[in-house]
Image (cartoon, rainbow, N blue to C red; front, side, top):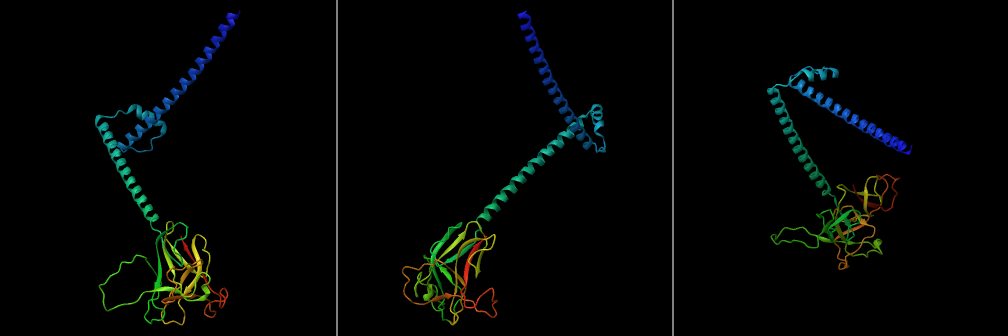
Length: 290
């Protein structure tokens, strides 16, 4: 009795195993048939293309066309030629794709290296907001009371390359000085002004906004401070620059020798709209990048 039970159990397991194996085999056969159908469809497409046949052949007619049509030797050669042409075209497309990718990477690298530059007036170092120092130097310009003086402030490098080839014609370059007690305690009257030339590593546009101490949306703050310029009573033209809020002085430049002078700028109502501006109020400034 026990032997019969054991035998029946083994037989039942074998039956289940055979059924399971048969199901797997049927699944594989169906997949093979589906693959054959796809291959036949592709062959029909090639045949229709080579013979310029109307593509209105229905899907149900494809197996019939495939079964009745046999490719001639010259058609096989033509198919091989077409395949070779396709391979050549694919290689050319890959080459064009590689060329475009290289050009894109070059353009991306160029954009990454196209950072905007700005001068941080009154500081020897650049702000830490994705910037790098080009050089740290001395603020300078023309004499404050010369009629033909140049207007702009310049940031002079500490390692100049000078020349002796001129002898009679000249303009002048002076250092820039704080010329007001209003800058105390950060600077005394007569202290010289440092500067630093900085480059943004992420932004190519630079904007100095007079009258603001913060940047507009989408722009990154580099530094803010006070708007300064030459005195209105001096003969020389001048320029508005943004003096850093925490400006410094040059250690060796404490003599009051004059030169390119600057003062805080205040609003004058009339032609200037008040409000938003207010008479006799001093203006701030900010330098932003994007």
